[in-house]
Length: 473
Image (cartoon, rainbow, N blue to C red; front, side):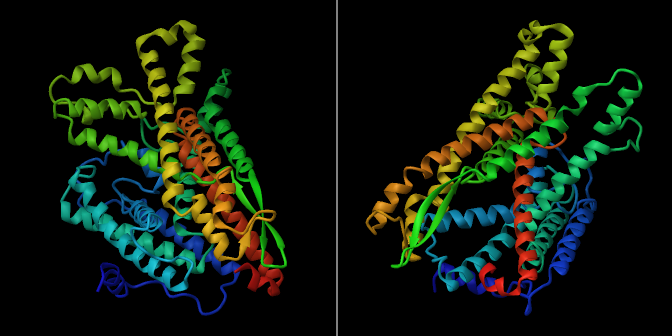
């Protein structure tokens, strides 16, 4: 018995959400999706039992992407589920695991392996947090709570996928980012020393007779990013295709966002790992310094937890981050003139931002190309899919090699352009949004909301015209 068969046998004993026997009405789908989102928000406000210290916030950017809140039941969030799914897709795309996803039995095998991998990753990441001291307390108790929190999210994702709209993972990400944006805009200080929300601060300056319009810059940039991504979603190149011998015409669209925001997710996760490594090797000679420079170069500050026990003073000037850089530059230049950009503190921040954008763009291109090659989206894979479906490009010989040659004119170029586009948009957003949200979070949310809108329209159309059900499944 092969390892794949053993894994499938083990996965068969893991409970799962039963598929609906009849079609779920749209109103009930909305209800289940709203209920899952409510449970997610409640879990995000339930603190871990046995937490003895303050949860660290150095991974805030990754938390936004994975819908996690350190120190709560969703400390790991959907991170284990996403990592398990991405890793399995890469293994299948690279032919390391032989599964034919075009076959219903192959898809069932993939789903079984994905379920088992997600559960294993939930326990793995659940214990990584207390072991690496990102949350402090009893390792066993905290690890189990974090693991079971992510497992609950896994089943909520399954529930939304079968009874709701879209996917639970997308819903949790969009919900978490939206909640963060709303809270940062309209937060009312309940404790002494707590900073009020952006809107309240702007209103205060307005009534004081000195309106500070720079406070609204993150909101305006977030709206601009939303509109740009919506516009980019519709940009694509149509490749004509023909089906069957009668030549039924059609088009294969290659979108500008061909790789979506996958490259940014991978790059952001890699940059977060630099922070973790910096905390682990902070007192190791040479290696500790190298990882600290990488941490700083990827937009993160060198905090006290990342500084070495001896000689920490020289790292104090590297305690800057890329967050809020735009507003800081505008305020400093307005107050002191352009000469301020040549002062050491501001010059270091600008150098950090420049290196960060370059590294983010380079890594996004690398991860974008890897995802296309290993995620089943390469010209060869698309040509094989078209050929197996009986499709071909009119005016050319019915040969997959010819199709690959034509697809190679578009896919590699669009992969690079799309990767650079999302890298620049996410990087600029991270520097301009100043705590409102991250550029990556806005990118993800816009894509998720756009897909939800399309699915809602599809469900609505299907309910209005029952005969369309067989075509829209």
